Length: 487
Image (cartoon, rainbow, N blue to C red; front, side, top):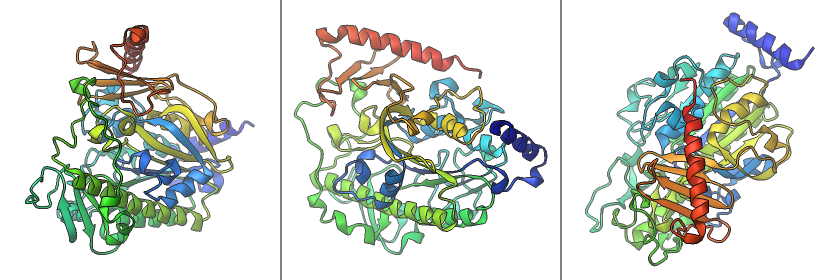
């Protein structure tokens, strides 16, 4: 009998008789361990080429999995990005552009973890998987009231169980400094979406990510005998840049941090809408503060990486490494001074691009340069686990890339930034960014073969007008395709 037919019968029994959920031995599907870091640029990972920030545990994954070099989010800030890859819809399909759950828009359609739950999996999230405010949703005093007190834009139907992990965030005891909007040094350490560095007292478990790792380890042990979809959300390196003191020495003195190249007149050919919402200028960060921001960010990444290692160790200890697909990614990228931009929202590669590593037991490690999107995770993992891909899912199944890294499923990656009314079509040769559906707020075009750091905007070049016209038509067609859905 066809194995998929057998799996469907087992799944049907699990749905009809939930008290008799099949053990792993009775279900040949893989477990899914989904690890996501918040606001993480691929440029900060040693497996992606960083010579300064060391991430040995994420490197462990890259050494045994497929590392994607051209993976892109669908929106370069938390809320719409997470709503997209979890629901399987692009932001312009659901019009979830802010910090809210996609549930009202998708109705009874299953989210990615819910689809697995419907097929007999234990599904759980630890900390931030859907959008949750950071630091506001994490701070002790707000979250400590109870595990269900603050769930952000969470979707309870996605989970068998869910767990929050409160921490002190910017209020952590230690040595802190506000870097943003503090040119005279008199501003105290503050919360919110503000660049703050805190060299914190205490060990890993004082903070949200240490608690998240500890809970994930506990859940792996508790549910090792049944199939699970476990989402582990780490909030670092999202601001504030808070980590235990022990993670800072490699990045001190901060003066040794090297900032990206600053090019005279870099913004001269960029439309106003293309200037990021956080820059060295409007944040009033001098060179000292910029370098400290980079060092604080790297220390936060190192701390997060150590927590990833604890979860991977627990999976191996439970003898589940060969039964579990592991995904590591971020909700979007992050600027660390490129073009004098900081943080997210921009549609440049540093912000729209994401690290993505997929480890499937038995498959050879590889590096894949094909264009992929976070929205592809839902159909890909569904396919790898032998489940039927729901009809509503708008992403592509990229599972063939895990055997053949040269395989392509798309000509361009698509990303939108509603804050700037921006749209990105990212091809291998060119990057096209359009502001406004009618391009009324400007266009950017970059030749990635000759200008990989995106310094020269070719949108007004007479020699490139045919390319610009072609991209305009492609973008219009893509938006029509995205909006042509079953909602």
